[in-house]
Image (cartoon, rainbow, N blue to C red; front, top):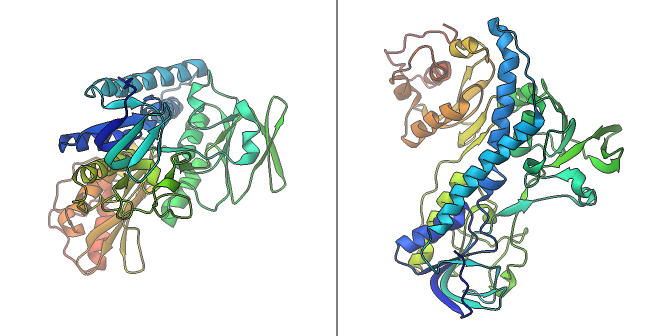
Length: 469
């Protein structure tokens, strides 16, 4: 796979980083007819496959399975889960390795000479130096170096007692107790998964909000649900010290020992050692090149940036989209074409899932609320909790965004995303068939509320069936 020649290299587009964004950038640039190089230090697989989306969802799903066993008593089926932590973690790694292997197969399919296994740094705006001494001259460069976990200094000294998402999945079994420092999306997913698997969990968040959830109603419902299975401390700074074979966290007069601590305080772009000072690019306060979000171009230079490296939309589908935009524009440089970006869309895979899409509500928004605490299908499933908040604009009730938490919201969010992108109104969405009993029909109260607020007609097909019927 890796290039082993000693001669200096030339290409049309050099892509630094073989993650999701880099793979997309190289593939699209090559399809545009560019001669490409894909430069990566290890070619170990994407963040999603190795330490992100896939292993975390494997652990989340294990937690949901345990919760389902406990919930069975509601249906008259008595059962208690017997959780074998070693088997849980073994399956996480086994299936994770399957996804990683699939990614590596993609590396093997690259044309000969495209993959260059090395570390690259800029020596000029479109020239690179590799760690083996070779140079690369390119017409354009795409930075797709991804991100790395941020570990605050006090935690670094604790060594193996501290985990991040890059090490937690390698643990042989479940800890008895886990402190989670940081209440972002991934931290919450893992915290709840471990709690569902019988681990005593406490989350410590320095801010007053968790999961990046902007909508106050959805945020409070998420917090309420999480606190049924774990402790959540908001507005606290946790200080660590090694003690009793584990870690003691101290905060605002509190003190508690944990077997392990998961540090989930965010990720920073991997830009150190890239030689950005040799490019003449303007950098923001965090050292990230300033770039145009519609073209991914850095200033007017033949340099583009995509994926987690630009610290803009750190989710997989956005990394893939950004790689596509950056790769195409790099191949066509200087004929750079702006692209309308996708609808903002995030899902946090807690149980139940949280989703946000489109524009958040503002003072001019019409908000239709659809509670799921008495929704028919949710009650049938013994999962009746949550709320959908649908945002629309006046005067016609055109849908603009939504925030939601509840059963099946990872799927329902896609329905609403499609509706928003197609310019649907609350009235036109109510024209569509909603099968009964489904979770989807639980959206109707919110859509009706928008129609009433803007004095728009409600579809004659909608018979006003209550959500619990």
